[in-house]
Image (tube, rainbow, N blue to C red):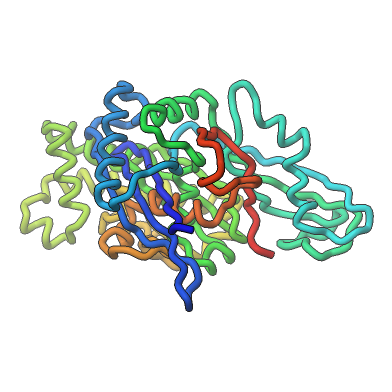
Length: 395
């Protein structure tokens, strides 16, 4: 059997990223992922929603990113995982399973997927992307993090379900239709980002992932290895560039260049480069964003579970100013810049926090097996909008 190839496309407001990795069996480490190809296509500065672009334009970006990655890897992509960062919503669903005095098994938890409650999530308009069991109660009195192996009469599970619109999914499917590439699964970008950067200990004991994107900032809460919730702040790196452009009457492209320069500089370098006339504008927006982030996290109902660890990722995470402000705002927590874990490759890529959501797709692909999924070599080539996934750890 040949080496398993895994491919991913991260479609974002700043760029389209395509990654190709191969799964290797290492004697003393088990299976590892080795990055073998990467391709990108940069979107225009004023693009805030990539799927609002003309169809031919976004297809060209996909073609470019895929072609570059294939040349880099020397491999042809046959199927792919795709991330989305728009058009998602959360639902929390309570499900009771009658155990009748037997010992609880993993199948009792997964029985939720056979119920009308779950099937009703598939409507003419929406369908679920991810389902996370985030809390359990045995016999309506004892809350547990792991009910497996306990004798009970009833098991109540609270599920966090992330859904998106079918029209949105169809747009992605249509874009890939001319690529001769099968769509394996669509994944939430902020979930993918947290998968890439959180250590096992952080994911288990609780962590907050702050993903500063171009058009927004997503705050994700992970506990007991499950994504228990997220919040959205409608401020991203575009707002910094747009502020500078509007106040200083320069083009958005020039303002974006200034923003990127300031991102990587301390106050002394800003002075040396004569960027101080822009820095006050930049700093004002950075202070606003860091303050909103702090308030949202503190007001979250998940705060007590996840506040020990704060990890910063995304397109805007390289900003030394933002890093310092958030670290100061969240001084009671462990704070660090996110870097990709569990994948081998160039540290230039793996340590880049703006690539976390792309690398998280590869992590997702290796850790989440489709129920009933067959080997690619014997399965019928087709595109899949959604299938039920097993979100449970090995118990």
